[in-house]
Image 1 (cartoon, rainbow, N blue to C red):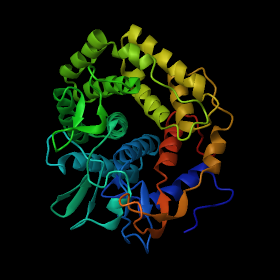
Image 2 (tube, one colour):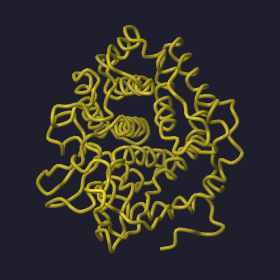
Image 3 (cartoon, rainbow, N blue to C red):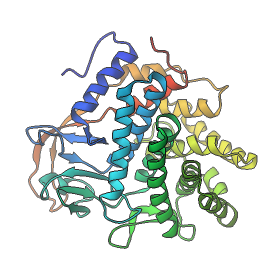
Image 4 (tube, helix red, strand yellow):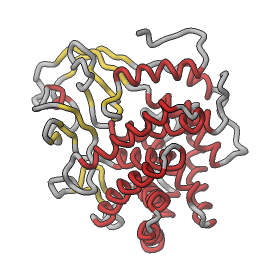
Length: 371
């Protein structure tokens, strides 16, 4: 299948990319963000980098939730339900209540690609599945975004109950672990620190407040609101959120900006305290000072949702028109030893980011159906 098409509308492009997503980047609702294509990879696409599958699945859950809210299509709701099930499975498969993995696949034993990416020692066997551990603040960010979009836009009452159960398990365990993500080995994950006594990254203060605010919104549990206010009152998390580091436009990749804007999106909308919303809008203004010239639709749309009188970057629609699914031919080598031979392969990245941006834009009326 060709990944390019001329003179197609953005809706036609979204439909085409949805097919690519379904054919090569979904497994039991989980987004396979970076796959190694056959013949080097498996025919079922379960070869590749699973490190960002959790955050990608949450973003795709958001995409399909927006899509369902716009179209009412049964397929959109089904795909949202599948990705919601994948987020739940990412928690259950670890065998540890409240702890979640980065990704999972069916496999009876280790495969060569597990040695080639950043966490080669974090793979675990669970019956017929293998799952990747050591989740990060990024993984947590995607879960919270996806569950919040799904809860608000696409979940029926039973699905809301399931969402609340999963969120309650994960966020409760995180709070009980002193705001740290604790792996199955009992140690804090590499990028799992939100603890106020050892926190060095102000961005994680912003994300922590968002996790608690969204957990309260989804579950109705007052304990999350109490913890939210404790971090603000006793540890200055709202002030720290306001000064989270912002990367200038043109930085490659602007990963932290994506995490910050994702956290602000729901946090600023759910918060009712006027003093706090003022701080969060100051944080948004800091991000915007660096990102206003970036046509990335997600940045543009989050800002306009929270600041409705703002103008979108004139190149926002061009971002969609220019978007292509990324394929790359490369030599994939094990991380250790350094002189190990590599595998010649072609990789492909998932188009879930386009779909999240497109359907978010449609939902808020920033994109017309005939654009």
